[in-house]
Image (tube, rainbow, N blue to C red; front, side, top):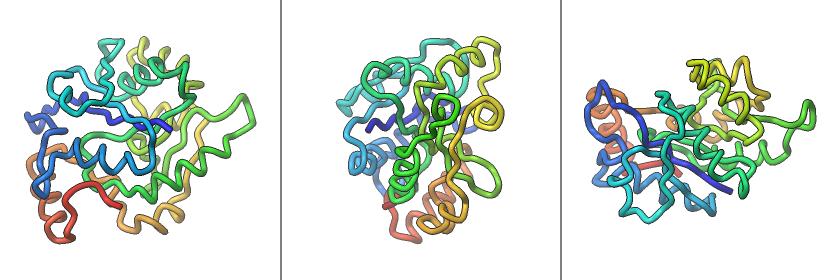
Length: 211
């Protein structure tokens, strides 16, 4: 299985490279890759700043369209790997507490597939009544739909999941079995978010992504 870390955000509210943020004395990108490597045999980073991540020794994939947003990174990575992988797990570089037990449960659900209408295009967990698009699997079956949306200037992943994709959803009750507080979906967009995440890491003895 393939996992891709999305590290292409513009960081308008937090003008630093998110993947290189340190929490608990470790860079987010490094601890994310270490955690993901326990479940996924292949790893990659989606970034338009390859010079910042070259030292990690994993494939770096740039955007094929100049359209802002994570859908562009997902589309680009799926396009690059379409001959080798039919799907991939995607997460953002600023989510410091991803739960690998939850990722494993999502992977098992998506492996069953969905036979209707040619198969599923995405598999995502539900949290507080909404899908979490940056802790999800996306299939290469969704490439045509993604491309149409990108070219039409409609790069919203939530809209894609809700309206445009054949999506498998992991019920919130199942999510809470392994991640009762939803730590997997915490992300860092502001200095306040960073302070809160650092405090949470210290409080819970978490130096990076979760179990």
